[in-house]
Image (tube, rainbow, N blue to C red; front, side):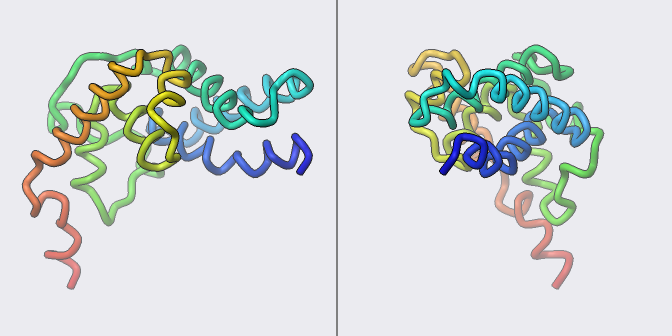
Length: 163
C-alpha cells in the first residue's frame, strides 16, 4: 500500500475524530484538510509504521489550537452548555449520549474517543494528546465515571419513545 493510499484510508477516521471534538462539520473538515496538507508535505519523513499516530497527533494539535474551546479544561454541566451548535454531528437518535459526551472536557473526549473508537493504546494516546500516561488514564477514568453515572433511562431515550 502506498503512503498516499494509506492517507486516503484514514480520512474517514480523522474526520470522525475532528467532528467529535469540534462539534462542527465545516471546521472539522478544514482541520482534516490542513492535517492532510501537512502530511503530504512530510510523506517522505513519516515512518510508515507510525503514520496513523503521526496523523492523529497533528490533527489533535490543530484542533487544540484552532477550534473554539479546544483547550477548554473547565467542566460545565451538560444542560448549561447543551449539545454542539452544529447538529450535523449529533445523532438525533441518541440525544442523551450526545449531551453526555459533550459535557466531558476536551481531554476526556479526546482520550475516550482515541481509546474506545480508534483503539489506540494508552501510550499512543499520550503521544497524540501530549498528556502523560497517568493523565490519559485519569481522563479516561473520569470520562467513563461521568458517563456511567448517568441514569440508564437517560441513555435509552430512543427505546422508550420510538417503539
